[in-house]
Length: 229
Image 1 (tube, rainbow, N blue to C red):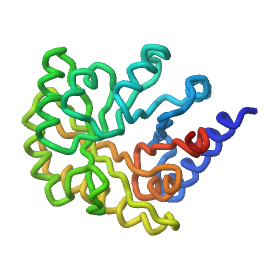
Image 2: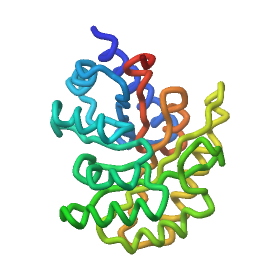
Image 3: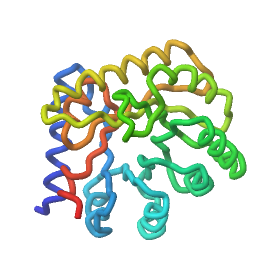
């Protein structure tokens, strides 16, 4: 048994156990294989093992991989997106996790309209206030989503966050809980074209806690593929 296959099995089991502990169904949570710098053969192995979401950080790298591997799985953009790459992103990706400013949203809407393809997006939220992280400030998000809901080629599916790093995953729990509570607050506002069904949060070091706090998508790289080169 390869390490990729075995690692995927462990991730699935861990997600299932965390979901059941909090009264959720394991099927409520999907995991994304984050493939930045990962060898193509190992990505294909993960797909063969049933991984159905691939997360990429860069448009150019994703385009090469999609051309080679096809669209039998969902491809999600999780990295910072420059507005001048929006025209490529709306064609390549099934979901964009990193929308954090109105200028980008307008460009995505314009490009999606041009190809007559509504694009699914998540709003990236910076809950920690770290200047090294992208994302809209928590207090700006409800108003931001209210504006976004007027753009008819964007389908707002939920929220995403990059939590701060702690040695103890329990220290990250308040940030995940904060994102869930923000999601619930926005859902109550009943904005048009806003579903708030997805919470993309949690990575290799803390995905178990993220599932316990309501994650619907966890982003796993090292746990599947090992340390990046």
